[in-house]
Length: 337
Picture 1 (cartoon, rainbow, N blue to C red):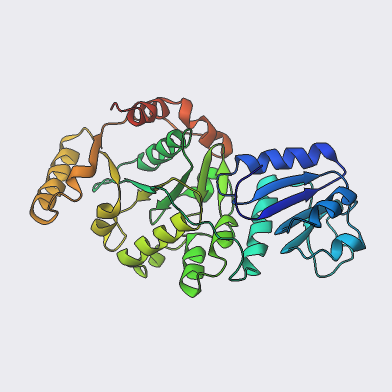
Picture 2 (cartoon, rainbow, N blue to C red):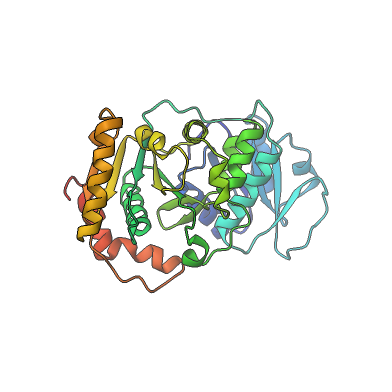
């Protein structure tokens, strides 16, 4: 399968696993490699004579000394026992776990070893940044942002980022995140080397939703300027094959107006009560005196339905498109409100 400018080879005598893993990779929107599958080490060795391999994922049953000598960028062995087998220079990953975890471990390790000449995607198409923002507390803004990202993701490659101080993501998704957006920004600040693969190593997926785990400490936001956020978003666009970002923007971010001005469009949920209406008018008055149309012209006011979301975990996220809020998001993306 043609995807990028380097080869990601999978070699496993367990044919069903090999092709199922290839299918999983083919649906990952952030994989920038040409993916090849081999069911014997012999076929792999013949292929490697004329084709340089950047990443090789091979089962321990297929592993041999001849494969260990191949000049691949990164060689990873899938172990069935979870124990490290021979070949101490190779990364060992437990085979029978979530494919999502396997991919993140591969890309994290690959990013750590990245050299300047390793393949990096160069964006040559329009990259859209969509913001979801409300100047007043809106209880279901994040659910709306997720629904919009999932709807847009049906037709495009979309990455969702939550920029709220308290996102509730660990509790809502049921996933504990060892690293998050703060860690990725730290890596971005240190060096651009290997950034695409470090980025890929941190992306999680639920259904057709790709997302980065939000920051865990609200004070982290105070250390990031609006200009740095924009440089970071541009780096994500240039280092990936995503077509769009959906930013769930909170009010505690310094220079929030700069981020809004950077967005291509802004989804603007508003409440129906009198106080929310008064707050919305105050915000619009502020824009009239300070914005020169840069934000106002891109704002799409929305009045989404309220839903009861008592579930948590992957299933709760996967069901979101089928709720009234999800259907509303679909109508918004189709051009209605």
